[in-house]
Length: 432
Ligand code: URA
Image (cartoon, rainbow, N blue to C red; front, side, top):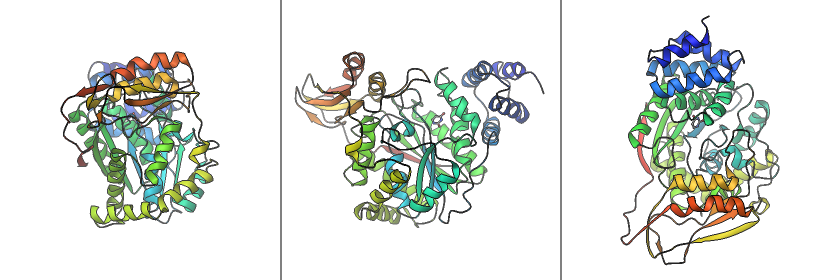
């Protein structure tokens, strides 16, 4: 055993950490033997000096070994999940889990809360009246046996090191680090005992990885670690310069997810969700290729099977799946365009900051989130608008938060005279 500060010192000075250094630190932190201030110092040293692939692999293993692994041995179908590195308006998990469950997969999805300006699946789901995100592992397996999917928060026993470190990184400016993100995502996902994992690695203004090249490196690191640890992993690199869909917030994103399951979701959200779903079905070998997987997904949407699975999952988790039951903000106000033209860009970072200031995200890790606030009817790149047309509708609970958010929301739009070329949000497929 060496004093934790010696390990911090090594990383601070740019040396590689050994497997034992990493294990001792991470297990000590999870066991509350190493305090937050020393973990924060090591996280910052890792953020600044990086980690080799070997160090990153040991970090994933140690974080996973800080807790138990989920027992999925009673599930009969291939066990699969997807994880996103986070973005603005990224509600993909909500429609995706029941959609692929309707196509033959079992999905034990363990999700997180908002991090930085990006929203979190758990915060969104908790907008549903009655929905419980704190199911035990046994309860989770029972829900999956019934409807094929279940979305909960991290339990006490799965990857406890990440639960603590995730919250610490959020408030110490140490989120956008390839080894730390890899450790955080892969330890949770590998603890789910998956056969298949598909990663949605985002780049752009509303993502932690601003540059496509960084996101590509993150995707390939995570896929490599996962494949080495016995799970079939691939990643889609997706564009997060602009929010996904027309809504950002919590309740408003749940409502948009339900629209998606009716087959009426915004084109970009449908594209990304279906691409991830098809990838999961092919990796799990329940469909032979992407064409067949897309046909199965289309069928599950058209027949209502995907929506049925969603409704069942929400009910089994104690919630009311009717979107009419979602909380509503006190005030709704349109933000009007100040000139006519084509929308040439919608800055996801500015929208994310605005939505956070409305109260949909946290400024401090212990802050509550306001489930009702957010934005809807957001215009998309390529839309033609007239002066005075609404660019979005703001849902706010009071005048102060509205006044704080508006300058960010107003800055988000670029309007030009020439319609930009349409672009796919899915840029590349990466395997380990
Ligand atoms: N999502 C996670 O679960 N962890 C991170 O570090 C970033 C995104």
